[in-house]
Amino acid sequence: MINALRSFLLAVLATAALTSPAFAQGAIKIGVLTPLSPPGDAAAGQFIVRGAKMAADEINGKGGVLGGRKIELIVEDDSGTPEKGAAGLRKLAGQDKVVAVVGQFHSSVAEAVQDLAEQLKVPVFLTQASAKKLTEKHLNYTFRTHVIDPDRVTLWNKWIQQQGFKRVAVLAENTDYGVGVVEETKKQFVSMNVKAELKTIIFDRAVVDLTPQILEIKNWKPDLFINVGIGTPLYLITKQAYDVGLFPAVPMLMSYDAPSRPEYWNTLGEKGTFATFIVYYHPTMKLTPRGEAFRARYLEQFKEQPVYGGLNAYAQVMLLADAMNAGKTDKPEDIVKSLLANKFVGWNGTIAFTRGEGPYWQQWTPPMLFLQYTKPEQAFPEAKIIYPPELKTGDLMLAPKR
Image (tube, rainbow, N blue to C red; front, side, top):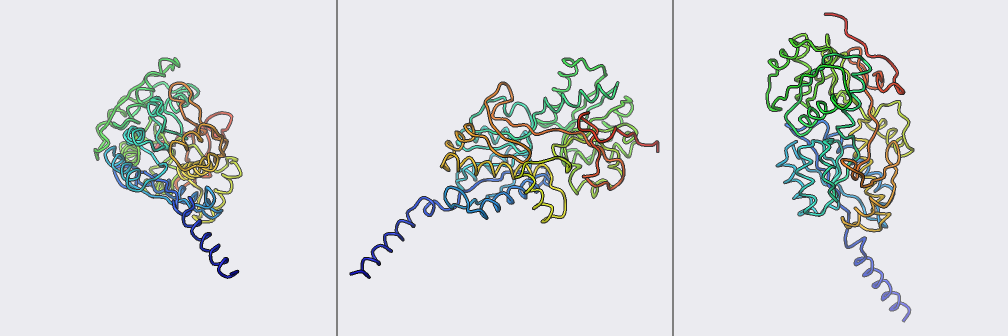
């Protein structure tokens, strides 16, 4: 009788385990939709995937979410094109049944993805897509933990005023990001009363020779050149500006953080010396305990400083796990509610999403710093912070005449 009862109880427990939500539903899937091949910035996507995987490994190593369910990442390549981005999201939502998607890098891709995400009711996270219209739409399923382009432009306009530049040239790609930055710069030159002349040129991101545009800028004789290329175009502009003698004779500001990656010096060699560039992370920054632990693990595993895209993707996957635990659910619509109702630990501060005005809708913004390399092969941690004034560790250095 006792043995029969024991067998019955064991059978009941086994059946309960098999039909419990944790067992029946299995792993919780999160999509990583990011550029992993041209014409997208494939290097950026690789770092984003790296950070997301480190978050999933950490979560799973600590028992998973919602009482023991593992996080499974499904990685898709959007190639930096809206068409592939939309196709990738359809697969992730329809076939893979992900509960959310992180990793969006290119603004033009993010717009196609976010519109579809709204229809499919899947939260999508902008990891480095910065066009203001992405959050100006006030969509329920779009979240961003990255800078917004008007803030980027405001900062470089203040720097232009501080440095006393008189002739500023901008060469930008014909993407949502590039065109948006040019329009915002024109607008803010007026609203901020910037006492400088402005010349802007838009180029097709598919071209392989920008010498005519760069020579036109050189002949205009600017005292600041802003390089708004992303991925391959960024390097093409830099090389050709160097070859025609525009840079480094004229200071060049790169509009995002590609120079913080190991690929920078491998691609440009000495031609990358004296570039100024915008970053959102510097190795001297004090991070949250979560961020510090990530940095330590990253240094141990990869023997180099983390790149911002990896940090941000890591934090996005972690906050999704936190949101699911806080809301006790993995349903996408309930994850959205939890994201709006709670505060989360990020890599360098507390992340909270509010529905602010204009582009400040479901938006959290990291810091922005201007760095400069002043010698060939300079390590990223050794780059001087030249702006903003309260954080600077050095002044803008001009290159000696060649």
